[in-house]
Amino acid sequence: MSVTGDLHRRYGGNTTCFEIEVEPGHHLIIDGGTGLRSLQRQAASGEPRRYSILLTHYHWDHIQGLPAFQPLFEIDNRVTFYGPRFDDRGVAETLGAVIRPPWWPVSLDEVAADVSFRDLNGPFAVGPIMVRHAEGSHPQGVVLFRLEGPNRSIVIATDHEAGNTDADARLISLASNSDVLVHDAQYTPDEVRTTRKGWGHSSYESAVRAAQDAGVNRLVLTSHDPDRADEDVDRLKSMARAMFPNTDAAYEGMAIPL
Ligand SMILES: [Zn+2]
Image 1 (spheres, rainbow, N blue to C red):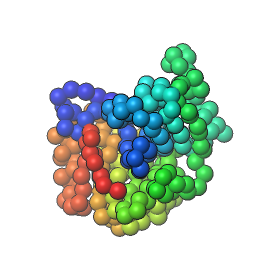
Image 2: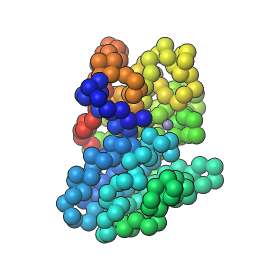
Image 3: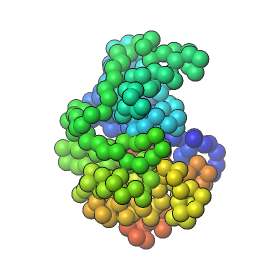
Image 4: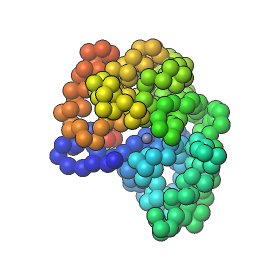
């Protein structure tokens, strides 16, 4: 869940949202957490824009920013949601079930923008970016994404709990030789072994192991525990760096070239 205050000034307290402007006026977004609001400033230009929003899963902290996403309320914008099927329901039905009264005053089918939905089913292109995906390990499931740009590749593996042999193998295969791996590192190794086992998140130690096994160049730790202050995240990052020097911890507004 999002957090605010002095303890979270540097890494930020918003929930998950990644964005790439894949071509002028076309934004590829992964997850619609509260971080989505930062994008609205760019949308203020008045030019029609296109948004391709890829959802890893439907937990609240990954969709919380969507209902109030201003570009949805501007005519001429095109917004396409890509998401996994869950329990025989596609992305349209799953999102539509919560973005509607009484949970929100406006339903997705009433917004001004031209909205469409695609269930995830194999590789697809978003502008010049090729997107591949695999299933990770998380309660109610999660999708791991690989984005292949003209020069670089990046893998987003948020909300993946290491330890499931099949899911770990799918991640390593997906992330193989990518330039950047953004990997969940919410807990300490001790926490995942004891009180947080099965909660759907990994330790920085597992993130490092995945980076090494997949042969990536750079590791970015993400999905920080909201109970951890900036200094705590610094500490986890240092421990990860001792094992994999090219490691950073994701922070609000961080830019990664693709
Ligand atoms: Zn989740």
